[in-house]
Length: 163
Image 1: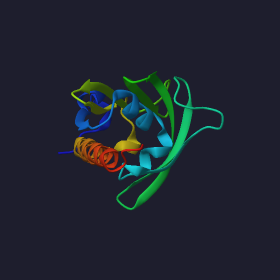
Image 2: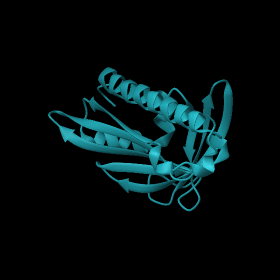
Image 3: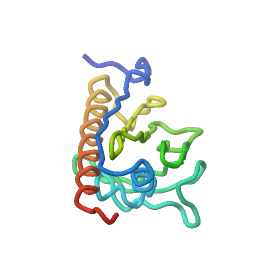
Image 4: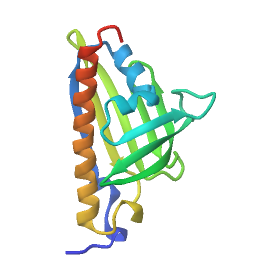
């Protein structure tokens, strides 16, 4: 069954995944808000960098290379939330007209932290797919990517005690 994306509600396309990380919330926040480090953990992102002179603060822009199914492209994203030791979020395409929000929240648990990564569509866009099946498949693909990223982050932290 084919459904035009104009009839789909973007709020139906979101997920949250989490993992325990053997590091303080301050350390986890420092790692995930340093966007240039994301390629250490993400199976889909590389060459990510803040615009010159900027860092992890609300309003800052960064670019990154993405890959999926043999295709590569560059995105521009804008930080929309930067709360040290607690939360970091950005919108692909910018706060005003973006299409996807990625966010991290961090909370202490035991000697470490629970890192939570969320993804949600802000609006429908043909670049994401043109049918319910395509947009659902994209969400599922991104959920698997988030799970891989969280697992790789937890493993990297465990393997790099002097981070």
